[in-house]
Length: 125
Image (cartoon, rainbow, N blue to C red; front, side, top):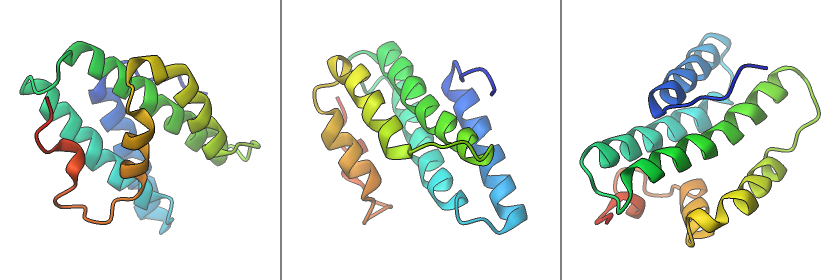
């Protein structure tokens, strides 16, 4: 297992690796990584623009949450038993004090029906 990512740039880099591997193998696991990368990039841009009440905390949160996905992906690639949903639930319980609306965020994030105009990043304060 690799060490956890420590910055959003590391997360983006690892997602790029997953996407590149998925493209080379014609693996549908790359779809989620692609959407996740777009969302992570938007979070990074919002942090850089100072759009969150606590931008430093948001980066820590984003990286911690992304590490849950990256860990689940690596376990899946290593054919280890892993339930991505259980990893996300564990992460939710650990990170809930950081963000009262985390469940809503996750629900909207996983149900990206309108990917171009998704409400998560509109009027973020």
